[in-house]
Amino acid sequence: MTIELYTWGTPNGRKVSVMLEEVGLPYAVRPVDITKDEQFAPAFLKISPNNKIPAIVDPDGPEGAPFALFETGAILIYLAEKTGRLIPDGAVARHTCLQWLMWQMGGFGPMLGQAHHFRRFAPETIPYAVERYTNEAKRLYRVLDERLAETPYLAGEAYSIADVATYPWAARWEWQGIDWAEYPNAKRWFDELGARPAVEKGMAVP
Image (tube, rainbow, N blue to C red; front, side, top):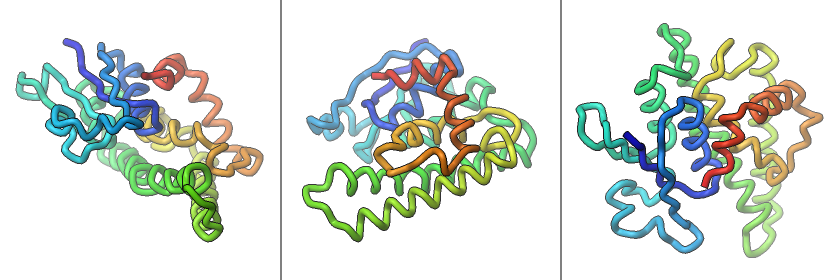
């Protein structure tokens, strides 16, 4: 049965479309145009009460009934468990994967989002904010680079939902004032993931 994906062309939205492509589940895209405030529509709020994209509706949910889910971290874990893919077995490997997923959810997404806002979209330039969030973006890329100096992927030897979550934000590196020459391990990872067919297809959604 076809999963409904409510999304728009943002890094968070593309996490889920990449994941769906990677695990091979059929899905139908339901665009939610956040430039027109469609995320506040009552019908969408029934699926995503925090009025944020993406969200999914799985007609074949865990108990055989339709199941709606919002928050990208929760969606990625759900899809990984549903398919048995992109989440490691074993307690240590699984929790290592989840810690890097939470690192993305709590830092590499929100802080880079602030960099996007103050560097590109704020109605006036606020030097303090630009410097603060640009520096934080660079710090987070250093964390990413140091991790990827130790291991091929964020969770270890295998590609996982931690990588799926992180890549779409790194894909907007220019918005964040990032010079890849300073992060060679992260650049190796970024180029490898970008060449994956599922990543290429998922990044084109919607």
